[in-house]
Length: 230
Image (cartoon, rainbow, N blue to C red; front, side, top):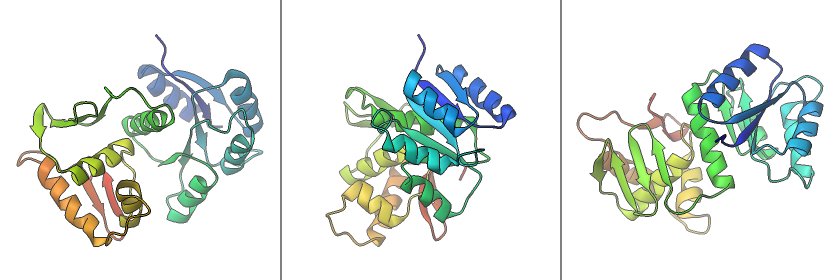
């Protein structure tokens, strides 16, 4: 059975080939377009489940294409992951402001890209409560409210559970303390930003055994990410 359909919008043929190979290997169906006009037509006619969109495109930029998808009632809710070589925070924010659901910076690992695509699809189409979120050897069973690492059950407090769930839904992405406060505690709750550090320490202690890799990466002056490469 074929999984969700991904529309790749990319004008570099070797990258399209690489993306197609990795996505099809993971069970996705793949469509591709070389420019924005073609992508708009395919999105309207074939209704993919997600668009993987390069920032730099001929004729129409990725950001403009994303805006046009958001303006059209037929494609307004279509999840978009932006692929960009730009690493500056301002450029990433522009991508998110244009309506993208997430971004992946080149060079990227295929496994991270697939994980990010699955996370965006989960948020767009929430699965039943028996869903399990996974990253590396970590698994969170949302129905049973249990977390295991390499088969070993972990004991997390309620805040650490919510924090880990948030990270599992956005693997590899760096979040500032303020973004974590909004995403985990909620925008209407006042919590001191340094409180995040306390809960990150508790989460690390809960999920990392003496022989385990630390899956939480600290990014100096930026924030934290669930990232095994850290």
